[in-house]
Every structure is written in structure tokens, then in C-alpha cells.
Length: 79
Length: 134
Image (tube, rainbow over all chains, first blue to last red; front, side):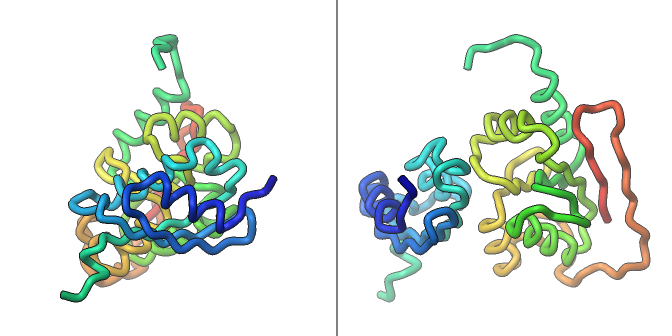
């Protein structure tokens, strides 16, 4: 069964504490914008790894391509 | 993996990363990228004027397999600077836009001129085909 944006969204949100994800895609190529307090203080590389790790070996295979943009809650909030 | 058997492909990749300060593992070549993400990353690198090496991962599936095992990064392209993984297309794009990429590459913010001819070097003996670009 091919992957859907909704599936990716719920798996990211279940896999990363406090994550809110917006996922678009055509079943093969996906783009995910993920916000989470878990990213706080983490290098960007580690933030993206957290998202890739949700899908393991499915990335590059069932999920042909996954573009990622990560946000900490701090960059979103205006205090 | 506890496999300690000889792994020439992994050795060749590690050597390439160690010997080239800026090295891009991509699908296709800088002149003929085989994927939009690789094409975009090449375009960004070229606009910075940095000298870099490029490895096409497509000729042998083991290149990608060993590279991803080494770098713990599932997708292609992968940019390494000074032996460290910087990221793929998304991270390189974000860093380019924020100006961080120029810092990481150690180049000026303005693109270099085209006065210097590209220095393309083919490494024949290795199981990897590496091109050095300017």
C-alpha cells in the first residue's frame, strides 16, 4: 500500500514527543514541516534524523523521498 | 554491525571523505544530475564558488548502502565538509539561505568568478569515481 500524507503526519506526531506536522505529498515524494519542543537545542542534522528515524528503512524505499523542515516551538511562538 | 570483514567499498568512501574537504555524494554527476535534489544541491555549491569533489552513487548500489550506514543518513545527496556530514538538500538549502553555508564552507558571501578552469580529477584506482570541481 502506498504511503499517504495523513499516515506520515500521524506517525511523525506519534513518534516525536509534542510534534505537530504538516505533510504534503503524492504518495512517493513528501514534504514534512515538523514543529516540536524536542528539537530545542539540537543541531539541525539531529532534528532531521529524529524525523527520518520514525520511518527507518522505508525512507528511500516505500517513501521514495522525504523533504523535511524542522521548527522549534520557540521559532514559531511570538512572546 | 559487528562485521569486521574487509569492506573495500566502505574504506573507499571513508578515504574519499577524509581526502576531500568538501565532497558531495549525489545521483548522477554535476554536469548531469539524475535527481532534482542532487541538481539543486550542486547548483547551490556551484554558486558559492567552492572547490568540491562529487561522487555519483548510482553506478553501484553498494555505494549508497555503505554511505548511509556510515553517515546514518538515509537520503541522497549528502554533503560532507571537513569529514563531517552537513546534510542533504533541505539542510544545505536552509543553510544557504541563512548564510550559514558560506561559513561552513569557508568561502566569501559573493560567488567566485569563473576565471579559474574547473579542475576535474578522476580517481581510477578506487571503486568510486570522484570528480573534483571548482
